[in-house]
Length: 507
Image 1 (tube, helix red, strand yellow):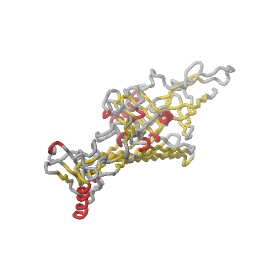
Image 2: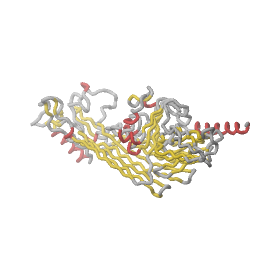
Image 3: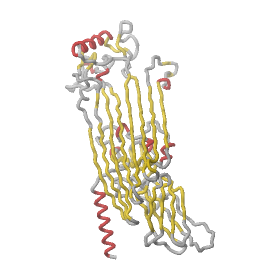
Image 4: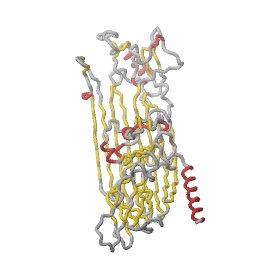
């Protein structure tokens, strides 16, 4: 008894050290737990076999001296087929069991003696966990694959999914700032590690929602595996292939013809070009049946939006001839002369000053492999990347830090700047994750995980290297601007995160 207690303490301490030695270890699997008994007492030594039907992955344990069992590190989702057997008793078979991310599925089984002539129905607890039970590890909301598919979304962002948790208000969970949340995918860091911009990289869209199997939003978990947050822990796991080949595709678009052009009796003429396209493809299947599987996803978002809406003044349409800000003060002849001089004197192209569009994109790619090494060891590896950029007009800041005369700046109607003075804010994320799930008999399970995330958010420009120049009139008010936007060159937000976890559990 003393030796058994001492061993338990040693294992618990070892597991605790394993948890604490790495920051932000998160849950990527599910589990099955319960008791097996007959009409009289609990049944030690009963065999429980769980088969993941889509992939043929098999998990198995036997009950302990108290008739209890736990199968850890199981794939989320399903369906699973569970078989409970014991010598001299009828085999119980339960089908269509679905597992939730981070939540144990409780399955209590009562076996019937083969010698019994009763035709009674065996009562089996196969439902999901109720809200109040001792197996839950805190307040959580789990969104499965079917719900993700059915949920209306415009931005196709993970933020459209996490809003389903009752404690969420936008990107705030549990009343905390979004920077207090911790967002992981397959255990790897998907937070905005630099802290500027949206709550997650790539303006809230670091991964395609078509690539997600489940998302769990945890507000107050008392699970030592979940740490590194004070708001909410958002854990997502990606999809994997199965024994059946599957493929899906989608295409969404809208253009200027779907935009409103009338306000009451007033109609807007000369609507500028606008197009927005989103399209993607997912494919998965077996490489070796029941053994090796692949899944791949690609999604692209392209947008062409109006750029500078003003035009230069001309003799036919002088500055101030029409109401509003449609015609800027600089003349087309003056701006053409500036561009011609820069090309001939310095071989520098400042771009155009009117009639151009602004382009933005968000391109995602994900590839995942799953390998059933043996009955007790399962391995997966996943690579994901997103590359995106969004345009911005020339900065209104200047050095020295003082305003222009009369307060008019580079983007007021008194000026018209060249397009190559604009800049792009890029948002890129590159992530690897590898995980080995192992079972050692009916007593121990282990997770060995390594991940790498690289958030690279530089600013970029279509301009070649050239000083930024403001041409002012006699009163110090800008007429035009050209050159490389000064706060873009060398403006880097580059963060890398490495993580490794060993999570040993005594079941």
